[in-house]
Length: 348
Length: 249
Image (cartoon, rainbow over all chains, first blue to last red; front, side):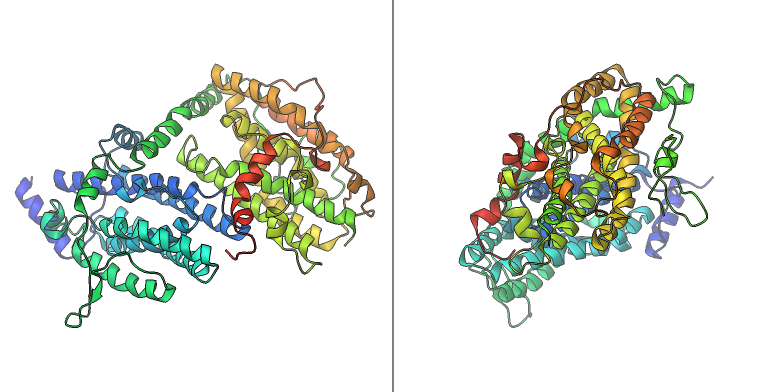
């Protein structure tokens, strides 16, 4: 029987050799806890993050944008699913994770506590928020925990598409009318600083960072990623012709990086403590959806139990789809599968 | 383009746009993440179908596009069925609305696949597969809720009482349907009722729900006489196009 100490050194050795840790492998309790915290926080961010964007689905300015936004928010729901599933491999259920979100015990990204006021916010979120998310997330594709890293590979592919969509919305607005440019500038003014905060506290004030780096759950420091984001985004804003709301932003000729002004960490802390503009609404929306859906989930469960026990009210459908394939050509026939005595007159 | 064909295309597109819009209001608020994804998917299909019908309707005039059709008409110019503009209510209402519509649309598209108009035939053929999934999914949920618990059964009965009255309109031909050249709509609307009712009976029987004896007495959507709900749907949907006319988005 190996001692805990030898297990731990074997585990760290695997991490150092870049061997992925899988659900059935031994892992230190704190590694498990750190992963549950990080992955669930990420999953919650995906589903809470649906809310500010879904706020504009019914008001999207044309059908193409409406369809793209719907697809995007749906992708986020899908990301939530992958991540909850990855988290469940660590021995916690999705219902428990929801409970942690609803009780306020688990956090989600503070950026989603800001409101989406105009259509340009949908562009700014795609460009800045998804842009920052990608920078945070690309290194996670190499995270040491297998299910997490694999989920992140899929997520990053979709996120980069979202980021391009967001930039395209901004570009269209910036090349549009005066009013549209004003809308774009206003959105940048409101989303810039919160986007920088997405990278988390300064390196000298980040309590979990050192251990996460050692375990290779995390690969780059917060400040390193934040700098990379500022460098790239500043030039994109110049291309768009809108101004980043930071008078101190300037290229440092020595380092080749853009220097930026001080981040208001008081605001960041206040939002994490629940005092952001939309904290209450976002959490209430999630709790309400969950509570209002309880009877639906109960009905589904009751039905499947009755079906299993043979006590359902009615007979099961012979063909639930009503469109079972028939014939060697794979042609579909609606009527023949709907207990309809008449032949289908127009079936290929 | 014949005026009757144009109006018929609006009828087809308006149904799916407005129902897609209604369903999309659930996005982020569904009873479970999987259901949120499924309903959003259906919204996407429906809005996609509307785009295809609108693009065809707009194809012969330079000043029209899918967006002028969707965003620059007022309520009386919309041709959708009254059912699809009804509010989401609870999950029972939303699912029942989808099922009543999909079961009709499934037959409609099955015939339209054979339309003498090749564009309608092509769009309907593509969309038929999507609608088959909508029908399957909504049928399963009607059964789950009808059969599930006392509460879910009661909620389905309430939804039925609220929505059944709007189903008669499916089979009342609007003047533009009567004026369509033969073959565009291969089976006239009234003749579809029997097929539709067979599906309703089968699913309701599996769900333990009664088939209402009362007729679906409400009508008017197909000719532009809507319920009060549509105006609010449009006010929300068309806000940006109306507030910033002539802009590119």
